[in-house]
Length: 485
Ligand code: GLN
Image (cartoon, rainbow, N blue to C red; front, side):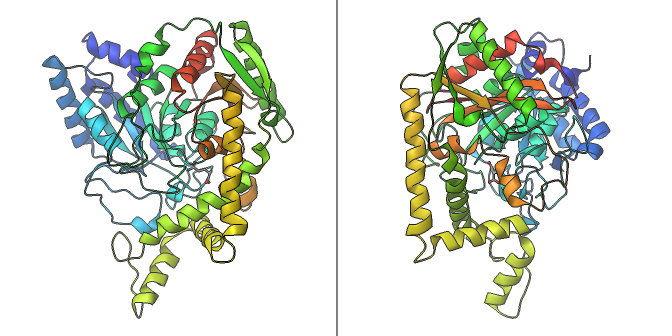
């Protein structure tokens, strides 16, 4: 077994026992990246090997002087929407060409303080708009389980890096499913925490009322460990929550069964439009949860069908405002025109790709005078109804279960010309962002082509512990997470 195949938890245990050094782990991952990255294209920027090795050596020195954290000396990957001071942030877009952030995101500062080693910045759909990573201006990422297929998106680079063992864990961001859906497509675990659980300071904004940084790992524990490091209040993010952060790793350590846990099954998440093998795998997983002692409860989330239209008004509306700052004056690309206005037009016209342009136009339209009430306001009211569906359900439930995505990974090129088909890929994940609650995807099977299937567990606001406990119990009772691409 290669060092790359260790879980983060086991790599940490070996570091603690002195069986391995961070320098050795990091070297193994760099070799792995050298062998696979040409085929996978998970990274947009790799930190230079010398500085990566220097960070590993520093971590080893910290450990030698008696320090320990769950990620001290652990190499991880970061979605290229999160700033690391001094390393380019591209957001998968041409418009940020040449931009080097002068500060690090709060999550990066926390990881640095804990001694994690950053391997590089991972590929993403441009400004996180997409479900396949094909909207990156720097080429698609390939799914490690089948290189002809997408890894999902928008955090496809992070999911693919973890699945192909080029990183022990990774950060992504999830505005409508961008951690959970690629986790499902790549057969890894992905957590979207409650809105406000993790600081967004230094995360490039897509849709500010929906964006949340999340974690990827090959096991529930690994993803939980990383979440522990980054979670918590940050005065620099005005929507950040003050609530104390539980020790997730401890909370899930001794889970054996699910006695006393009430798990909801929503018919709206198990009906038409789902690939039959996905539905079958999810139904088997549900009986597994029952075998583990959980009580299953039928529940209805009646406004589910409005989540997609509401999201595709709210997210583009917020994006159109957030992306107004890319004007060619302050950051990145500048295409000089005849005058100021022409420079704006040339810069934005050349810098943004087609999907981002579509969203800006949709969003600007939805917010414009005369249409605001008909579209944006209505979408916001719908959002409240969707949130109330969950509030009502969670009065009597701990967790709700369903599929993460309606299908397994599709072929590269299959949906690029049909935005609506692409948008449907997030039909089961968008609602959690609209409601501000938490969700997780973990592997629950494979289709006949050997592609991973994701099980989604949804929890109430700050219900991460409940979700993680169910996930961990299921993972311990199954072998899916042991398969390798
Ligand atoms: N796929 C969805 C979109 O394109 C969600 C993206 C995300 O979560 N960042 O908007």
